[in-house]
Image (cartoon, rainbow, N blue to C red; front, side, top):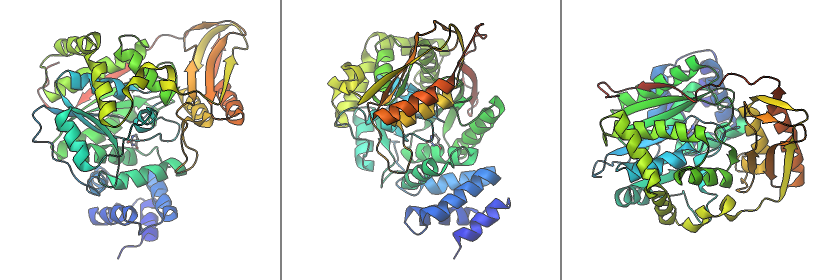
Length: 442
Ligand code: URA
């Protein structure tokens, strides 16, 4: 019988573990046979020493098979899934999944909670009063079949090993390993059963990948895993040096996603959403050309159909669809404060990672495993990179769970901003596109 301490030691010294050994670790940890402390040591060894492509594929497969592997082949509509590698203010999934469903695809997605300084789609969705993301495999499949749109968390049925490992990684600072990120994401994608998968791979200070080369390598790793499992996988590389949009938190991000689905919202969120949603339709085979895909995406928003799909999904998952029309979904924070500019000038830097940590301090994320998150906590930015500000003018509003948390979040947020004299050059938000299928028409 293997010993987790010996496996950690071997990994730390750069040895390749076998598929059997990796399966043993995943099954034992999911079943309670390995405690959190030795598992955290093993995760740290992986963060430090890395994993080969073969190890990453074997780990992914073991994590996917820790629960049910869904078969969606009976669904008439083409099935497509989407996942982000993590960011700050990244509410793109909340926008593109209803859009793709409204355009004729079936979106069956398993998402994660906040991880480190980044937010998670599940925490955001759970800010909608009543909504559940804890769905059995049967309920998940039925909703995919009936409505064509479902978003669930890992559960006892679906990728349970990822659910446990994800929470432990969040609590132990063992997040930013390409092998752990790729296996976490792809295990959920393989278990959920969609034939096409579009990945949003973020790069920059607020992402887990800091350079474009690292982001490309992570995208290629996940595309490789998907191809070997017979799935069509595409990746869009997006900038995450400053937060996406103006809203960071849970209820506040749902509010911003709804604004985009109503035809408004911030330009950067719209641009990434348009690119990702178009690729979802192309990869799923709903349309054959890129221009047609973009037109279809825009008309699903213009007609209100995409928003209608989100409302239906909320209702199907026991949530209150009317909450989508209320500011902050009807939540009121316990403490609110504003960050003011201490000089006039132009915002030259807005560090997304620092903003993410400020949001966690405000109460929007977890500091310890199992901590509750506050749906009302978050940050509303008033100025982003390139914006002119006046001394004493508002840079951002912070909503927090208590006065202490508010003070801490404001201190952190202050460090995120740099104000100078000259605006930096404008950069694109959608940076690059990679595909794991041949013959795509662009
Ligand atoms: N999203 C996930 O589901 N897992 C990760 O490790 C990072 C982002």
